[in-house]
Image (cartoon, rainbow, N blue to C red; front, side):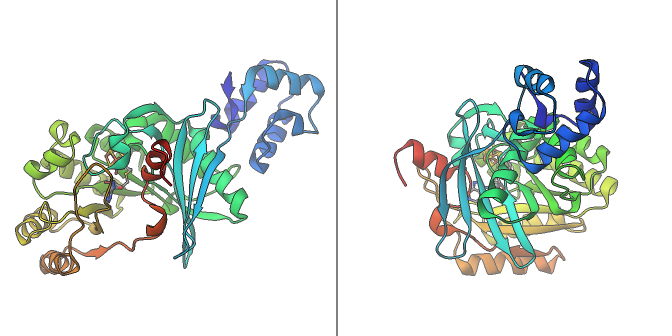
Length: 343
Ligand code: SAH
Ligand code: SF4
């Protein structure tokens, strides 16, 4: 079966024309899909024969709400969505002054095995299709009756390990006939799949690249992020410099602060030496505790000291505001808790 929502307009047109239907029918189909219809029989201006053809050859992918949690602290909403094979992923909608941001998943699980991450601990099942990424946004918009203005690919999964589907999604979501969310309103977070950072840089998209660094040297990074054994910090930062040169975009480095593991003054000095002079910003995130790990978030004084040391070298850093802390808003945790019969 063809996943019609993952197709570009011209591909729908080719499909329709190759099967003997008029070109203008493709536009009608695209417009129905844009309206969010969930079955072909709702496309009431199509001839019955075409509806039958679509029913027999294609499907419309949807993200069904399995669970929904609303934060009492800040209205952050967390969803557990399921797809047609019953696989589930999480998405989180956050409200900021400038509008709504959704954090979507790109894979069911993740292969990368970062030791501090709930998703990493649950293993990997499969990649998401472009339409499944789009559907998370559509379902949340419909459910909350809002328009989402910003998208971050920071949910479950490693986007650059599902490169082709993610690029297709980025092109679709930013197109006028789809959700029309501009690249400058999209962030993609990666643990550092170096060859794909080069490929992405060469596309010259104007999205924001976030790089999950989380350590100032290979020793610490390899102990928490296995991907570092394949692509070490020197190679990763070289790729980041290439990305900046190609796109002229500032990179944001994510740094989950873990008590005594990566939050010492020495770590801050080492990090500032490595990032000094780069067009970048460091987002410090006090690590979220995850069942099965004994990582503790860094104390406020440590966070402040870290920022001071970085700023002495001209590296800007801020502590990221935590939203939805009462609903375990960081991804991977709802699914894990559901499986274990928790919340
Ligand atoms: N796989 C991608 C994107 C998804 S993870 C990546 O790793 O970048 C999104 C972000 O959450 C990453 O920066 C990741 O390192 C971070 N993260 C995962 N578990 C965390 C935890 N327990 N506390 C704080 N940040 C965490
Ligand atoms: Fe995967 Fe990102 Fe979690 Fe690492 S932090 S296991 S790359 S989702």
